[in-house]
Length: 143
Image 1 (cartoon, rainbow, N blue to C red):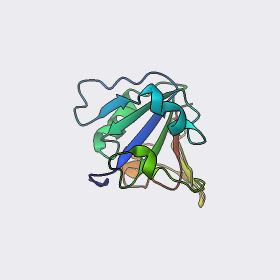
Image 2 (spheres, one colour; image 1 turned 120 degrees about the vertical axis):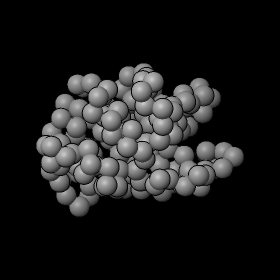
Image 3 (tube, rainbow, N blue to C red; image 1 turned 90 degrees about the vertical axis):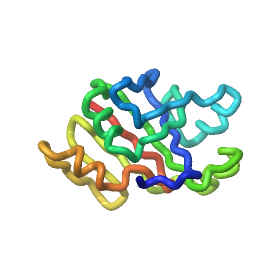
């Protein structure tokens, strides 16, 4: 497992997220309306905001392959050492290391360049790359 037990991962989506029952390691919880605006400001562009458990698991790769639809956009931000209040641990410095992943094109882009993922083994390759980071929002698209 990649995440610390006190960590938090936020996920924003272009549509309401539904995690199918066949992926029991993935859990999403909608962010409370009172926290929504301050969490979203300057970090996310998508309308729906959740916390997610299991984004570092293989089942998240399965979700991307099976359930991400054409035109979907997901944004992920990993927050280390989240304890009582998620606001206390949000990055205060600008998020300067975004990651962009295109599922249809099989590309993975960082500040270091764009990498082509294998057509046959893209899930395995992506799983072993850093896609959860506290240094920038990871945007995953399928178009």
